[in-house]
Every structure is written in structure tokens, then in C-alpha cells.
Length: 52
Image (tube, rainbow, N blue to C red; front, side):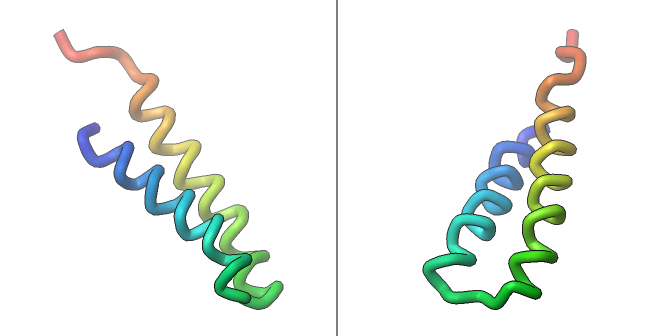
């Protein structure tokens, strides 16, 4: 769970930087669902039950 915020941060950076870096539509079409899936999965980990 410690790595979840870092993984979310990386996925967000990759998504935001795609536009200024001028990545093509093919890359952005791949990146959008990929990053959404990664962010959702990591948020689920953080939202899980707290350790006793």
C-alpha cells in the first residue's frame, strides 16, 4: 500500500505530459484507459480495510 500514491502520481504524470510532449493519437488512445485502470486499482487499494 505504500507504493499506491507513487503509482497514482506516475500514471497522472504520464497522462498529463502526453499533450505537451506531442504524443500521437495512438499513444493517447492507449494511455487513457491504461492510466485510468492503474489509478482506479491503486485507489481501491488505498480505500481497502485498514490494517489492525
